[in-house]
Length: 178
Image (cartoon, rainbow, N blue to C red; front, side, top):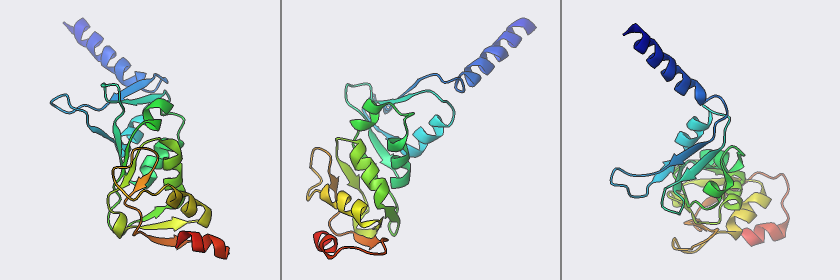
């Protein structure tokens, strides 16, 4: 009996320790009824902290899950080489920062460059985008007028306040943003 208990404990320790060995992990989003769901960016980042291996985002249906989270968390996934390119480049994104938040334009630029799908900002009318004029211009160049835009667009962005952090900005750049 003690031998079985000892082996069980050893096996549990091996499973726990195996996350630190660089093994690849596939994170599959699936609801209780088997339907496709989303993956919280903060959960994916927490999982990434447990391994040095590659993490693939999947929903087990031939398409990719929606990544949901703050702009900073989602940008962390898109700037990380630890997440497999296929899983993140084909995922829709929902930015869920709270009303009154300040989103960094560089984070949004990283996200838009990283996915070929729709990026939705849920509280776009009540958040502010801050950053260098070049990043803000790039983000607005991808802005869509509709939440049904299919690829590589940011929806719900047109009424968002902006803070430009450059010390100097060319008049033409300001005109392009207005």
